[in-house]
Image (cartoon, rainbow, N blue to C red; front, top):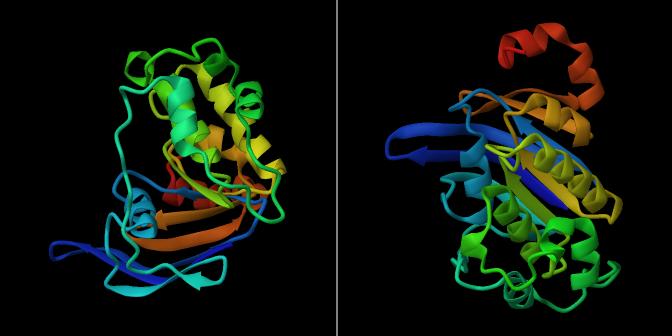
Length: 220
């Protein structure tokens, strides 16, 4: 579904990504792990066009997406229901469409505040709304950058259930995360970044069993 091949990205003269490559399949959760500054967020920004890679290739569903413009619109003044409506897109072949009812079942908190403006919600609720709005576009893949950061444990629990539900629905999920325990609950595979390079890649089960790798690269 999503393939990155030999990505190189810079901030000024600083060479941040140094040949990052990975592939993500439909219905799979791949987590990017690593310490602060390892290159996780830069990888995500490169995928969506906020950072323009200077080398490498990006493909989504078999098509090159290198150079596409990002579209990021602030909608904090819109209500929950209005946010979902703004995100609505036609159904895609082979995927059951996401509806407001399905999203409210996935995120019960949002169902209770249908008319509340996004700007008057907690950080965790805004995170859920951002994901729900994206799902109204019936995406085949979704990128989540630190979705558990700063959230209360009960919201993190709901977020993990939501990611597993996305996986079950056939959505490809790329996750950049520092919360290792959260990542271990939802990810099928892991790619560990260090200094802009992938230094370990494999199943999450294999990473959990590789104590040397976790000590060396994650300080777990």
